Image 1: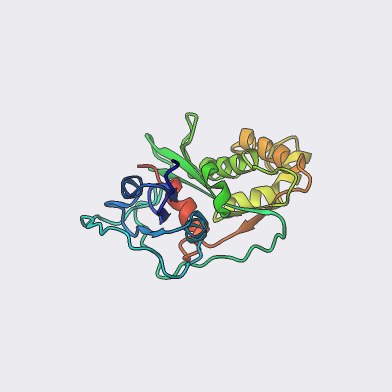
Image 2 (image 1 turned 90 degrees about the vertical axis):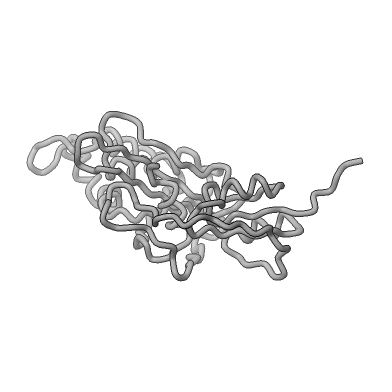
Length: 244
């Protein structure tokens, strides 16, 4: 006899957001995690809806967890600005019918100093693609916030599960926005040099991003979202980008 799953545990905010089949798996994601949000549901569909930001009615009870007080997490690369739980989570409407939406973020602990360590996060708004979410250390010897931001956008394009569909990428990096939407055409005309004749910073990533954007049909769109404004997808990408 096949045992029917009686509960599905949904983790909206935790170490690894997603849907879990046992309480032990769920607890590992939320215990001692500040600001965690989780519930149990009788169906997998309701659980996925909760992870995606929808509050389904009449959730099943979840065993209580008594997390120990913990200091607020800090975003790597900005040691003076703690990440506090958002007062209200905002779910931005998807204005790309039939397309995909992804949030990206990068950070660097000790940005600009010797010994800096960087990481990046990629968060897909559609719960069906949460297995593609990324929380990774930045590769290479140069560990800067800007390189992490660019890498997150590049990895979002490279891992897109449906390349033929419109892709909307959210970033809170003004540098990444300007590089992709304003500066690349001029740099390209100048042989990847700035107006002063010097090499473009992060040229390897910039060239790869140019190819990634121009080789896809339809071309992905890059959208700016303000950091720490309570936007759910951005908050999740931010958590994924923190270097522990």
